[in-house]
Structures are given as C-alpha cells and as structure tokens.
Length: 119
Length: 108
Image (tube, chains in turn red, orange):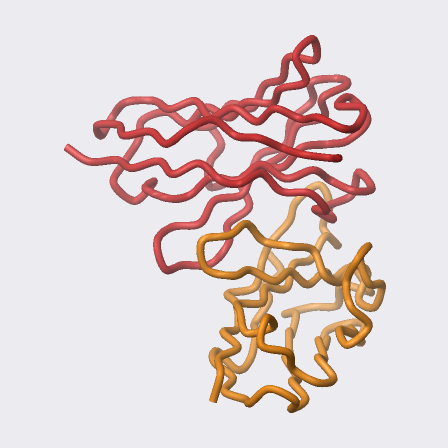
C-alpha cells in the first residue's frame, strides 16, 4: 500500500539544524510532488513548501525561505527537509505529504516527526 | 495573500446531528479548496478536494460545497469517530498553499 514513513523524533538546541526524512513506498516516488507541513503544539497546520522528486525543483513558503532546504534521493525513494537556525518556536510536528495531482491536494501523509528545540 | 477563515472555532454537537463547518476566503479562489480531518495524535486525512469531490474511501455522509469565497463542509449525521479537528486549505495561488486555522468538532 501507499505509505510515507518518517524518521524519528529529534531534540535540538537553538541555532542548530535538523533534517527530517520521509521514505515513500507503494507508488512511483518520482511521479508525485512532496509537501512538508508542520504543526506547533496546540496549533493549526502550516505549509512549508514542496519538492518535485523528478526534477528536484522546490517551492518554499516565504516565511521559511533562507532557512529550509528540501531534497530528495530517488534511488531510495526518500524526501528530506532540513531546517536551519532553529528557534524555540520551531518546536512542532513535521509532516511530509504526497501531492495527489501536482497542484496542492495532499492525499497521503507521513506519521509525523516531532522536533523539539530547547536549550 | 489569501486568508482562509474558518467558523465556528468550536462546534459542539451530538452523534446523529448534522454538522456544518464554514471556510471563507479573503478573495475568490474558484473551487480550489480542500478539507482535511485530523484526530489527536494523528496525521491529517484528506476528505474533500476541489470543493466537492470526496477523496477515496471517505464516507458519503461527508460532503463539500461552495465556490468563490464561501465554502461548507457538511457531515449529514455525525458518527462518534467524526469528532475531530477540520482544516480547509486552498491551492488557487499554486505553487503556494495556505490552511485555515481549523474548527474543533466536539461532542456535546
């Protein structure tokens, strides 16, 4: 079945970087854009950006430009999201999500990765 | 930037009742609106896309309507498993995306 499995929880200090991975299975990885969405504790969903696994093209939300980098490794069907210069308000659950049609509808989600930023 | 405003923030209903959730866009977004359900500790789940299309496996009691700036998610008869958070999301400014702030549907 179609599945996205994310890497495990992370604890980081302010100023550090974190890299979260998302391994896809059950479908052709290169055929579907991958989004990253985060959710701070008790808050709503916040879209961070997407990557086209086929071309490597990316598009980031303005809020994260300069701090986020999305990459992919097609040989292992894995997308990754790295966030740098972490702050305490980056503490959140980070999700990857497959784009169903290449235009912003997210039909399959990973289980989420908790990132805690604390000194 | 298009802002999505969901109302009410919290909706308290009983199983078997009809739920009506609203999502209003700050400017016209055509039909490019999706709805997601999220239960505590779980990832979101796609319910509706392009305003009224049910995603695969979504029960028929869920329906979406609207276009332009006003959209509605209706749950015709609430089941116990429907009590959750609901988020709307637009893609009319693709490749950029935004979510609404969410509605909590709680058991009365």
